Image (cartoon, rainbow, N blue to C red; front, side, top):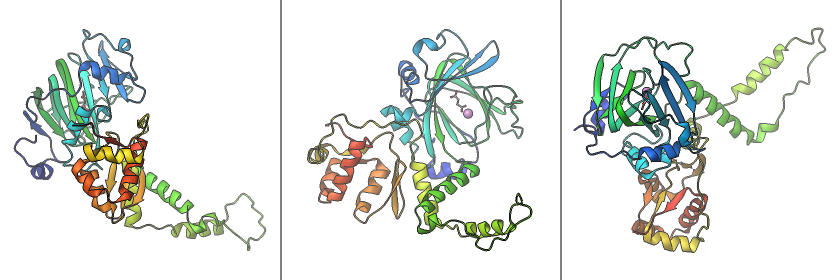
Length: 379
Ligand code: SIN
Ligand code: CO
């Protein structure tokens, strides 16, 4: 997929560094969804979609959901529908995204699919994230440039560069893929009807990380023994300037805040929970009539289990994090949980060898009832 490069070579030479065009990265690729299936997704409440039109040279942006009759005619030029998080809803899209798991799950974000009619696109822009742009149907002309000037046209509903200075240009055909590191200016224009998959990454800003971490610390300190202790000032003297902020108050509160501390374990615990938290619009699908634990175990012995497409399971040496919840990684769980997290499944045979650990079967059954894991279909 990386054009005769190993993942190690790709990561060393290109990742976060420079663009790379890979012709026939995935030969004979089929679009993971048909146009009709994509339009169906765009009609759902729990799917994030956008419609960008460029009719009469004017950019317009609308947010979904879109009923089929709310989309412009297929005969009309210069519009595009972008559907985010397709990997959460379709196995083929999920499988395609999994091919990029040589990059840590903690960095992978989602697979977006765009459909465009001839001339359609989102305008010349830059992103703050790495992206693999995989052409899956029809052709798209990409122009890219490493310009410094990233100023945007004012007053538009979407980010369009004020001055785009393309340096390179290619027409991508199905199976071709373009990797772009953050901040490379790019413009992709459909040549006839086309579909493009964007495998996107998440890179939280310092601002976001700081805010979320402080929030995590606040939650943690709420559980500490001294959390309810209040500020005291038995030596306060009467004042002539009641509105003045007492310097002693500032000093004392400063001392309380200086006691807030954390170590690497707190950072890991925060990151695990934060990065495994499902997006706000994710809804799990628990089984309508769940099997009891015994039936569940019998069944999984024959079929194996896999993580649901929507589940995020991360781990480190001490803990695991499933869909935002942190738990200690016990010595017993260490035998199977990292394997489930890395491969996203436990084969039937493997499960059979593990079933004498009842803590595992209890836990997996719980996750199954929550819709976090799925029993595989009979082979
Ligand atoms: C698209 O697929 O049309 C847009 C993807 C991008 O430029 O980030
Ligand atoms: Co982009």
